[in-house]
Image (cartoon, rainbow, N blue to C red; front, side):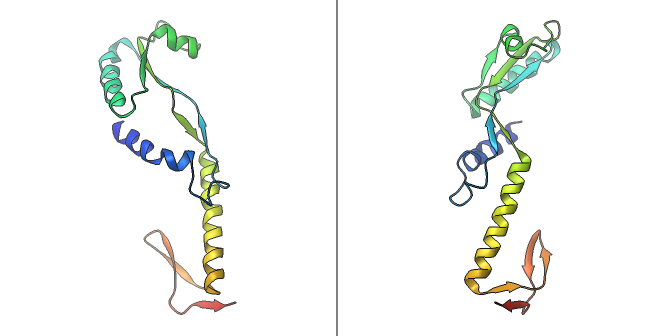
Length: 140
């Protein structure tokens, strides 16, 4: 879980304030707190996870079962023994993010070929990236 939080923390600035040129394209995050809950037999694990989480994100705080149920009324009082909340956690609109990257890729490709006055006419994928074949360019 700590490694996931580190990745999330590292990418947060990109998602909340996309680079110039992408900010109009990528709008994909919404604030929504996240509550982690535990049964009685999971309390020790919850405490360990809370401590590790707070080391990375100090705003994460423990909640009583009553506080968790007040926020999420479908939680059962007989099931819930402990909880914590990450109040600044955010959702990612995965489709919005994907569409933003697709639009950005098309924009970059257009800009690159326009500036060079050429466009690739043939190519292939190499290590997950598109590479034009040598000599296969069309002049505009």
